[in-house]
Length: 273
Image (cartoon, rainbow, N blue to C red; front, side):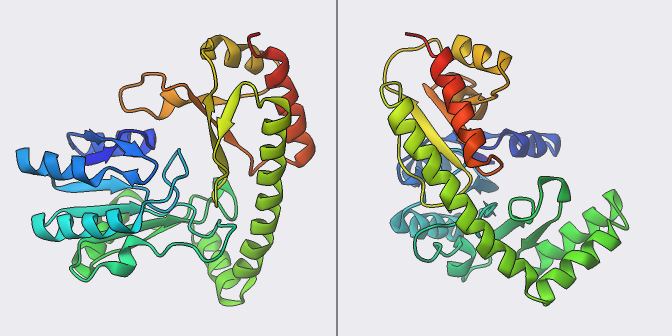
C-alpha cells in the first residue's frame, strides 16, 4: 500500500496490523505526488493508496485538480483502491469545499472515509464509509465481528440530529468559530512569532502548518513549552521516516482566542534567541 510520506501515523499503524507493507510517497504544495506513485506502480504491484486530498494531513494543502484526475486514472488502470480520508470536509472557510475524489469515481476504485469527531466531539468515535457495494458489505461484516452492537443510543441520537437539521446548523456555527480562531492564530503568529515561523493561511481544517525561518533546536524549544503547559507536535511526528522537517503543527480548533494568545506567548518566551 502507498501512503503519504507526511501523514496520519495511526492510519499507518492500522494498515500494518492487517499485514500491509507501506511505501511512502512524497507530498508537496499540490498534495500527493502522483508522478512518484506512478513510478512506484511501474516497479511493483500496489493494492491501495491511502490519501487525504481535501486538506492534506498535516500540511492542510488541497490536492490539485490535475493530480486528482491523474490519481483516479492510475487507480482505474491498475485496479488500485483509493482510500480517501475526508476527515474534515465540513470545515472550510472560503467558497465551497472541493468535491471528494469519490465524486469523480466512475470506475468503483474509491472508498471514502469520513468522521463526525471533528464537527461534534473527538470522543464521539463515529465514522462512515462510502464505497463500492461489495467492499462496503465486506467492511460491515468485519465491523460486526469486532463490535457487533456498536453504541445504539449515541448512533440514534446523532441520526436524529442529522434528520432534524441540527447537525447542519451546528456545522455552520462551528465554521464561523473555527475561522475566527484561525484568523486569531494567524495574526498572533505574524505579530509575535513572525521572525521565527512562516506559514500559509489554511482555507479550512483545524490547524496551521508552520515552518522555521531559521535553524532552531526544535526539540528543546517544544520541551520548554511543554513544561509550561503548551503542547505542540513537531513535524517529525507526521513524517514516515521520523526525521525532523523543520515544521510544527498548531491546532487552533479547540482553543479560545484567549487561550491561543496565552499559548503563543509561551512559545515566544521559550523560543531560542
